[in-house]
Length: 487
Ligand code: FRU
Image 1 (spheres, protein in one colour):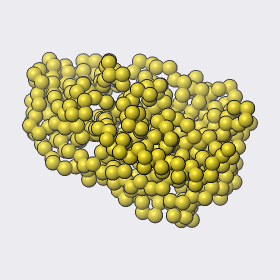
Image 2 (cartoon, rainbow, N blue to C red):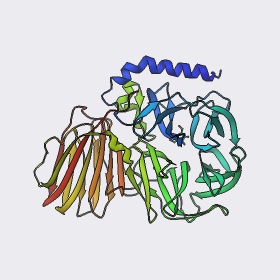
Image 3 (spheres, rainbow, N blue to C red):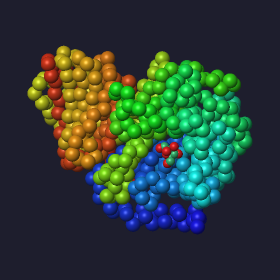
Image 4 (spheres, protein in one colour):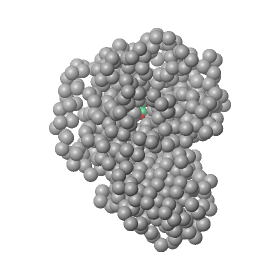
């Protein structure tokens, strides 16, 4: 028996209430990242600037720390930093979304918020059905479900989801993640003049299209926009085999840059570039705000089997979203910058200029902590290797001979170490955001980013610098960051 929206919501609120203290007692609870109040969070959804506020929705299973029939959780902010928990926006209570209100997006039209999401259904035969659905809100909080606006078109399997709607030259477009009957991942587009009637245009990109060879059996969470004179298609393909330092996580998220012809439905694009090189990043989504910035937020997690051994599960919650990052497109290459509002988190600034790092482990007065921002500007690199170790066993280092940058963390079993890498021509600048159990490292002003969860001794707070084969001269700034997520 399907439960009414009210019953579902009441059950979810009861669970939040019943488990409040257990969740709050977790030393790994984050200080300044969006988290679920209880249960499992995955993709960011419906990220939008509406009536002067930022709205962020997220895939949410309030009942378990596992995937299931998803709700849309909801938080609201004036500044992208202080987020207030809002009423849950969508519950899986209709025939067309009974097994999950899956990922989607939001746009503002005639002062209303139009939300598009995928209704996920397991039918009586146990087969998947998928509907692209619309819900409308006049206040950004209460949503009126209008039901399906798009069915799966011929030639595609029911792995057809994650509508991202945008306006271009006075028309509405929707890009959807798809799988063809030949099991190839694609991003397809639709157009509309009223947001209710949609016309299928075709595949804009996909495995085996536009000169791209085999590139995954399903593409999830597409996003399409222009930035700096280039069209950018962000997508999360599934089924890429690891290749050297690339595609080392179970699923990847990245982008193609090029030129879209919306009339002909063609996209002349370059190679796929991964957006993040860390362990925990997937399904990002962007929006623009009143200032015109293109801002990206991702899921600080991935579809890993290691979910069950993440320590927060014992405290009845799992996963978080990344910090918001402003995108810049430079000759088709995306740079990612933490949004400037994050400076609101800073307190207790410490600065050390002209620090010479040699072979011996160096610690600096008042440069330590478990929740901080650290900025390292490298003035001179006369060494073969430079490393920074933090916490109990996490670190990053750059090998100037091989030009390999490496991040290392303890694995979730607690028994081993694991690494992720990328190649960098040089190391000039590092900006690192450490929260209790996460780290986001922005390298060379957004050229590469490594995002990872780290679960280690919650009290370990050292930060140590080393060089090998010479010396490295650095300027260091460090701030403690405030606790702003209070729900
Ligand atoms: C990506 C994804 C989406 C889907 C959602 C379900 O992580 O699998 O494709 O809509 O999660 O929660």
